[in-house]
Image 1 (cartoon, rainbow, N blue to C red):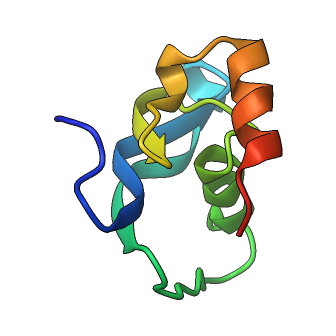
Image 2 (tube, rainbow, N blue to C red):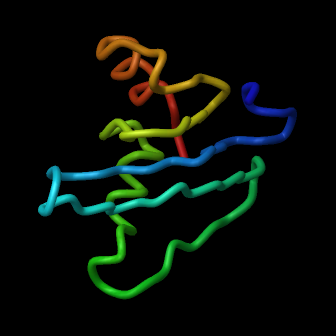
Length: 94
């Protein structure tokens, strides 16, 4: 997968987040694909405990996915170190 196409503000490709291991493994987010174009509004909806907050933390760079790619503002988050990630969060505005 390549970066963000023209007009795309945010892209997530097969993003997953797991907590725990073996019998205690919880898959909070399971292979989510998402593309948000510049100027588009998106609502994240679902029942309590379904992974909405976890997904938003992954998309905002506050947490790192177990698997998959998140591309906000044309930057692949898992390729950034902690300082670069903090700079990106500081610079980006909704």
